[in-house]
Image (cartoon, rainbow, N blue to C red; front, side):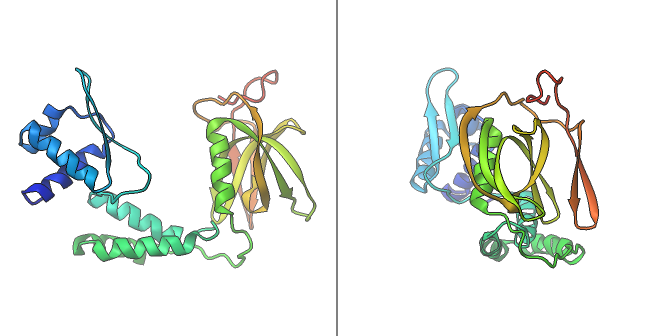
Length: 254
C-alpha cells in the first residue's frame, strides 16, 4: 500500500474494520507514526463519513461503529472475490426485487477488481452452473423476509396470512426460529401455536407478517436434531432435523 496520508488512512481503516477496540499506541505502532498523526488520520476518516468512536482511560481507544449511511468499504482479495461471487448468485435468487440491486452492485465491484482477482472470479463463474427453475411465482418479498428474520432474532411471536398447497388461505400464529433455503425456495421453521407442533412455511406463500406482541424464550443457538420435518421441493425431498426440549417445554429448542 502506498505511503502518505491516503495510503495510511486506508491501512488505518483496514485495521478498524476488524471491529476490535484499538488503543492509540497500538495503531501508532502498526502504522509506524506518532499518536498525534493517528488522531489526524482518524479525523480524516470521520470527514469521509466513517464513524469512529473514541473513549478515554486505560481501556480506551478507537472503534469503527455504524453510522447513518454505509460508507465505502475496504476489502482484501479474498473478501472481494467472496462478495463478487455471492452477488453473481444473488442476482438469480428467489428474493423479489433483489436481482437488479445485485447486478448494480456487481457491476460496481467488477469495474474495480484488479486483473488477478477478475481471473479468479471468472474461473468460478465459468465452471459453476446454477440450476434454472421454470416457475417464477415463488419470489419472496424482501420486506417480509427482513421482518420475520428480526422476529427470529428477537424471539417474538408473529402472525401472518398463509396459503396452503391446495390454495386455502388462513391466519397463523407461530414462534419463528429459523430460515431454511433449498434452491429457490425459502422456508420458515416455527412452532405452530394452534397445532402445538413444529411446522415449515414457504415464505413465498406468506403474507403480511406482523409482530404479535409476545416474546418466547429463544435459545442462543438453534440446533438441528429431532423431530424430523420434511420439505418437499420439486421432485426432491429435503429434510430439516430439530432438537426440542421435553414435551413439558416444547417451545425452547436447545
